[in-house]
Image (cartoon, rainbow, N blue to C red; front, side, top):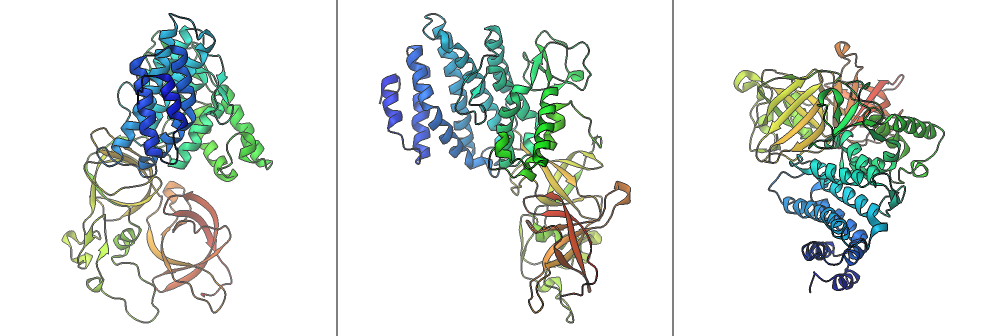
Length: 531
């Protein structure tokens, strides 16, 4: 087929089968790249691109599944997928720019100039956002391409002109400025710290709230913490106090957006559902409220300093993301059902167990290891980049265990005997394949315990491993329980066993929910005997 001919391309679009998304994606790439190279008549070129948008959007999303659910390092199976998806987004942006350039000489698309500008900004932004979805470091030049597309729209007087866009789920229309602001908002939302599901909501909500934001040149009276963006640079929004006063510097104003978020949260309290407020029907009210609260300051106010300042630190830590390995490191033995009368097995009698990402054939008593510390088996060593009171920023080069957002991990600095537990708050792969993560240490010195739900008399339920975090007066944190995933139910009763001691507790409030754990507060459950 001749992919340089618009008529043939339109015919081919009619023959596509979206279910076979790989073949569909390949055909779409040939159409887009073929027309971009051939440069047919601007009106015919535009007709093909507009006809392809819905199918292309679907195929790109299906291709991206290879790396969005569990991020892959560069060089792995999903690498080629990422390159193909990003390349097609960029080719779409370049195509709309090429149509606008060609039509400047013939004037057949005068009434479509705003649409061409909006599409170019939108697709340049999608190429950048795709790196957030893959948790990859942004290559040089991506922001510059987004800025240039917006600057051209401003130059041509098109930045504020709204055009129809069926892919905008909320408004079904968008201006080039709104498309540009939506990309800026996504970066402000800590995209490397979001799960796939959360980031999809953030991307949708950025389009929902972009019309309430403003960009201007009023810089003189602004606080250093206010956000600005240099349209001539290669970065997104930054505090004005960190930016040079260049002719291309703009102030970002999200004050009206802050009011909108407050209004949405007030609607939630009155029982209004997220779908009715343009947030989508796939996000529960409680989750929407928590996510919006986390976006309120960066989107609506200004930059805030870190609660605990980071300080440079060198060294290594040992880290595991395996639930049972964390318990082994704390107790010196693999979790097993509590026994009331018989002695437990020694470690040397245990079967091989999964340790810090590796398989140990046989493990000796941890107290017999060098130094007598409890991590007496192979572990992954991570380099410390910096540290604060609340956590660490770590780096690991080469192959390692695949980690997920908000996964519970165990961490032990090499100069400490005690293992701590932490929430993996963000992760990002550098271009050379190095993985960087940020972890927030859960306050308190953890102890491995056994828990099970209280059931009707006469029934038995097996115990599961959990972790008890006693109160930490220094950090002003109450005690909490870290349970297996989806265990939390408000006011439910658990039997908690530690050694030979058993008691009942009542779960009160969910403090944090991760991919493999629930952290919750609890109170003693009175007048209950062990089941």
